[in-house]
Image (cartoon, rainbow over all chains, first blue to last red; front, side, top):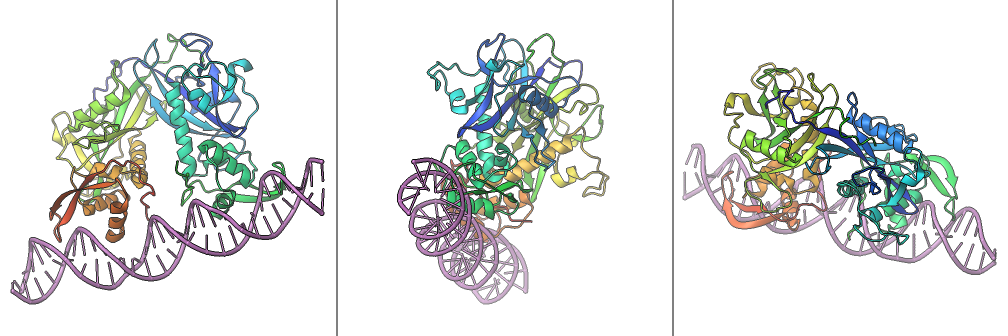
Length: 252
Length: 252
DNA sequence: GATCATAGTCGTCTTCCTGACGATAAACAC
DNA sequence: GTGTTTATCGTCAGGAAGACGACTATGATC
């Protein structure tokens, strides 16, 4: 109510990014090693300050380009190019989430096809794709036996929320295609679902479901045999964004 | 990346509230008349600055109490009392959304049972429940023939997003019970769905669906005849929060 | 009190979707 | 050719939902 512009508490506003992709049958997120305190040397989500003249989605798109080279994909433009899907996730503003000052972070979720290794400011050793389970386990040991420190700040919570959003959203939308290259097979799309959900799906029922949903997939006419076995039809994402009825995630 | 606390652009952070309820078979939102520029005299969503030591959800709960007297309801506590459901909606940060300065607003969505008339700072004429269609139509005429000005700032967009969230969320969650008093009948719950979706539902199929979903409704043993007709069983909300399979919104 | 209107509740039938799973097809490796 | 892998088509049973008939229990009206 008291809309007095001169009497507001000072806030910093940042964007943090949950960038997800599927690599080697696992759901992976982009992590950046922090180069300065606090949490120096710990892994964190990419992010940065929102500039004074920048919209939140612009800031998120800019950070995405800086960290991955990915061009953000406007959801209102259905033309599926090399861009990643980008949407706002949630905002985190606990007064103590940054030990130095009051920082409100508007987290965004980006979904991208499998990419070459990332670079963070040109330094590849300070950026990596890591399986989300590895990033989320607190104080355990990673795949290489190295001890794993939890993510900096509240980034474990943000990552967890982003993963949950992605898991639920591919149920009722065609968003899983954002993890695929522009042309893909039904089997590749199925492996995306299996990696994101961490379950095995019946190939026959999956095939029936996705090819039977109007507007989900458009055949390109080509075939490929890059997965081995019988050649598979190639598809690209159709115009439909909402799946009705949804793809059902198996129980337990 | 440049996490320099001294070199951040100055932001103000506010919370805005989309408070929804069902009155007279219509989905209504709480609107407050602005007492000062900009947009003086125009209707707006309730909201205010986030205080320096306050979490975002705390700020939203505080605003909700100030504007409606409603106690916010922690989603992790299933005990359904007189509290309203409160959840974060989205964050709006266009650089020009407030003409005076850079304001980032974290919008929240509140769902409440039908309430007595609201008071805004004790002044009842500056607060009202208005059907959402009335608030969202741009430059038309209201139910009383008075010309309707659009909501202040980007509040029409925020309200629209909040309504869409509510409409989709009652499909797959038991959130519609947040619009009902603590004890309610199946018919009253059905009228909530009908008001929020703006459609007519078959009373028999609806009854089968909600009483057949385990954990959705718990009979209290009592009956009521407050709607006229044959007395109806009274229920209270069960522990289930997710509806599986969901309640299907009729097409078109 | 009989009749009517209103709302609630129980069933039935058909249709659609899904899960389980058999069978065939087309590539590659040996 | 034989075996392996992946893709694709088909069949069948069970469950859920839409359409809708039938019955019940109140209050209102004549």
